[in-house]
Length: 509
Image 1: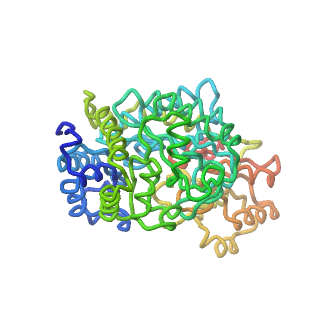
Image 2: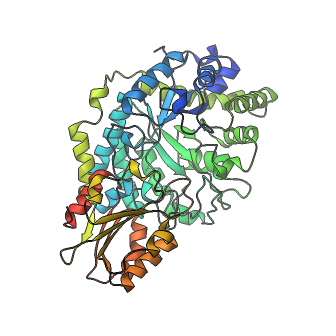
Image 3: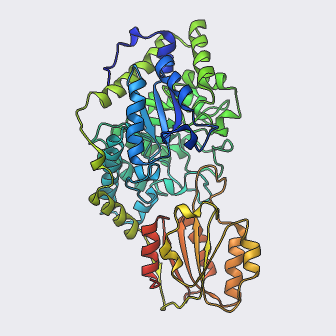
């Protein structure tokens, strides 16, 4: 890998391109691209890296060995070593098969306060180690938002907890663990995305809170992350009128420079959240977004709608004097400092460091220790009704163990009405629900017809147990409907190990 060149040796266009991180598929071949509207095909990607000199790539999809090969190939094309990022909040295995896959971060808050920081530190270390081993050098985690809004559709269980103290402790531990390896960490989403009921992937959330409220709830975890030497802070596409009455936080100089840089004292990289998200892309042209984000204080523009137009717009803004050369240099110095941390290290990790028995054991312990169970009586089940978001994709995570109890029926929001009308109204029934908040879902809540189904089963005295995988807020909605004699179990994780553990604790396998 080539050494970092002197910044002044690069052309203006190449310097500006260093501020751009584009998205690509983690798969090796273009015919495997799953999101063509966002993932750049190989010929164009090669041009952006080798000719334009973009500063980084964010990868999604593929297996850990594929990413190992992919990152080597991408770095070989670059004249300046690349930042290679991934959203691995729940482990490298969340994005790349074969690596360690943790339950959502909120699971840690369900473990005793004596143990949870130790697990958070281990989680940070394992994510950093496995990322580095496959060539990913920028970990887009941890989420330091305080998820104190049960209706939050996008943060939800991605947060460490619902209280600032929980998030502070686990954030600090996670960053300390990750700092053992030569990767960048990222606190997100500033100034706070935990108390929103709108997904910024789809719309722009509004937070009408006062500065005092932010000081009490949203800011303390960011201050803790900065104190723990987090490398980057990601902006949120949220509108906070008390900080800036004119624009969203990603494009706000008072927010990114005034608050984050000057008042919180953050000296690392400021990166935008993905600029393809509707929370920002629906408001302005790609050119206007790029220029405004840099003027606001951003150093890295993540996933712009159009990389060429973005680079051209910034070049024009610098040449016209709208963005000064001094402002540009501040960002480049920060980028070079971050890259030096990564590429001046002497870690020699390999694929053998990915998905080790010890790492998998720690992930399994977090999963099992965070499971909750209420089992008043032994269960006899005839019907196993499994409710998922989409029956066409549920095969990716449903484990065969969940099918071993009773006659299985799998339904989603599209089929639940028709299927449930034909249910036998006498058989003892287990209902398994897979529902959590995920980006682009738009709603973290359970479908109304699922609650209606539960009530129907209760009326006919059929419901014997519920197993819920995903969001604890859905559990909070269901518990008041249940009588004490009905068993229930909850897991933050939807993975096979969680399904097996839940079924075992309910005595069904």
